[in-house]
Amino acid sequence: MLFRRYTYKIVLILIWSVVFLWWYTTRHGGLDGVLSDHSTQIRNDAGPLLPDTTGCVPNIAADPSVDSSAKFYSVWKDSVKDVQKREGIIRKIIFWTKLWKKHLNVFMPGKEGKLCPTLPQCIFTTSAENLKNADAVVFENSQLPGTYIKSEMPLTRSPHQQWIWFISECPNYLTIDLNSYSGVFNWTITYRTDSDVSGAWGSLHMVYSRLKGADLDPNTDYSVGKTKLVVWFISKCSSRAQRILYANELIKHIHVDIFGKCGRIVCEKQDFACTVQYIRQYKFYLAFENMKCKEYITEKFWRHALTNNVVPVVLGAPKKDYEYLTPPNSFIHVDDFESPKALADYLKLLDTDSEMYNQYFKWKTNPPKSIPLDNGVWCNLCRKLIRICPDTRKMYTNLDKWYRGENNDQCVPLRNGTYHEVQFASNTNDL
Ligand SMILES: *[C@@H]1O[C@H](CO)[C@@H](O)[C@H](O)[C@H]1NC(C)=O
Ligand SMILES: *[C@@H]1O[C@H](CO)[C@@H](O)[C@H](O)[C@H]1NC(C)=O
Image 1 (cartoon, rainbow, N blue to C red):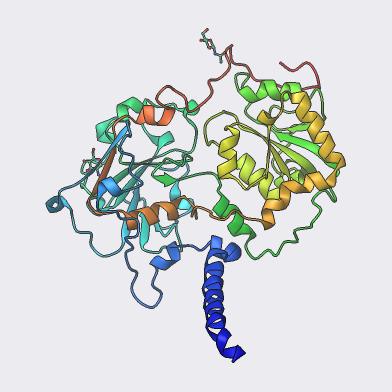
Image 2: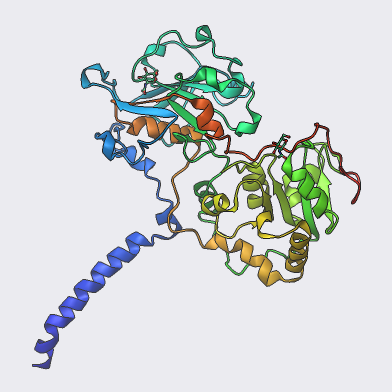
C-alpha cells in the first residue's frame, strides 16, 4: 500500500534524475566537452566529405555575424541567378603573394598542400592556374605594393571569390597606403576578433588543446625549482615605444635579467640562455608588447610565457582584452598597479608566498565554460569557406579606417620625441 502511494513519486524522481544527468553530462563534458571540435563533424569518415551549412544564414538581417551599422565595409546578398554553383565540396585557396618573404615551399613542398589536416577538403596552392575557380585568394600585407596597383592583382575575379587581406601586425606598423586598397578586399585575417577569419597569435582553444590529456595535478607547486625572479627579452628598442619608459622605472625597484639586442646580456640564438627553456628558471616574464593596441597579444604572451610555466607580466592591450582572450587569472597586468614600484613590490611579495604565486596557474586545471573554436588560421579560413552562404557578399569600403579605428583609436600613439635605440646597460641611467 505504502509502496503504491509512492510509486508515482519514485518514477517522477527517476525521470528527473535521468534528465538531469543527461543535461549535466552534455553541459559539463570536462575539457573534452569544452573543446569539442565542430569542424570534425564536417568530415564524414564513412562517406564523402560533406559541405556544412551551419554558419549559413540565408536572411541577411537575421545573420548575427553581419553588423548592419558597420561603417567600413558593406555586406549584401547576390541575386540568385548570379550565384555560381560551387562544384563539389573542394575549396581552393590561392596564395597570390609569398608569406613574409619566405616561400610557402617550406609548408607546401609541392606548390600545393592541405594546410589544415582536419579539413582535407581545402586545397592551398601557390599556383595561379585555375584562378577563376578558386574560392579564395590570399594577399599577405608585407608583400603588397605600397599603393594599390591593379596589374599586380589577379586580372579576373569571379563573383564568389574572396580576396583576403592577411596581416599579423598591429596598425602602428602599417607601411602601405591602405586607403588605396579600399573596395578591393572581401575578407580580412588579422589578430583581431572582428576579422572575418582569426589569425590570432594564440587562443584559449590552442592553449587548452595542448593541455588536453596532460592529467595535471591542481596542487602542483609551480615555484619549485625556480631560482630566478624576472626575465625580459627585448630586441626592438625604439625609444618611442610605451613599454620602454615603464620598464626603465620598473628595473629601479626589482632586479630584471634583460636579454636581447637592447638588453644587458646579448647572446646568440644557439646559446642556452637565449632559448625558451631558459625562461623556465624564472617566476615572471615581462610580456611587454611593442605597441599598445586593442587585442594585440603576441607570442611573447602565448608561446614564451604561458607554455613555459612562467607568469606573464603584461603591458599592451587593455586588461579587459586579456580577460576575455586569455586563460582566467593567468597574467599580471601593469594597469592594476599605480606605479612600477607598486608592481615590483607585488612581484616580491609573490616571490615569498608560493600559495599566492600558484593562483596564477589554477587556470590549467580549471578551463572556462566555453572556448571559441580556433585550430589555427588555415583551418579557420577553411571552415569559413565551407560554411559561408554562396550568395553572401562583403567588401571593405574603407580598410584603413577599419584597421586603425575611426579615430585612430585601435592603438595608443607612440611617444613623442625622436627615435633612438635604447640600450639597457645598468639599473639606473637608461634613457
Ligand atoms: C568581393 O568584392 C568584389 C569587389 O568589390 C565584389 O564584386 C564581389 O562580389 C565580392 N565577393 C564576395 C564573395 O563577397
Ligand atoms: C605628441 O605631440 C603632439 C603635438 O605636439 C600632441 O598633440 C600629442 O598629444 C603628443 N602625443 C603624446 C603621446 O604625447
